[in-house]
Length: 95
Image 1 (cartoon, rainbow, N blue to C red):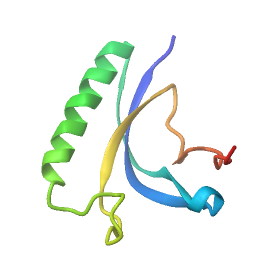
Image 2: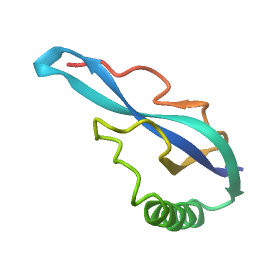
Image 3: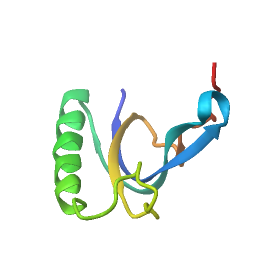
């Protein structure tokens, strides 16, 4: 039986490389595993509500894409069975 895990991540943006004038990708480091659900629909509904609340609470913090961003923004993600410590699990490649 599959369980769906909701986890809080501190999000960041990392430079991927100098190709095409530079490219960036989003990363996350786990802060806390929050809850588990038996259905995918319920997990995504609760994650959506949690992310809307987080956006309201973080509205005065700089955006992740801003040059003055120094951490402190969070988001909730849904995974099957377990939440990885970081995302993405492997560094993306420019192609």
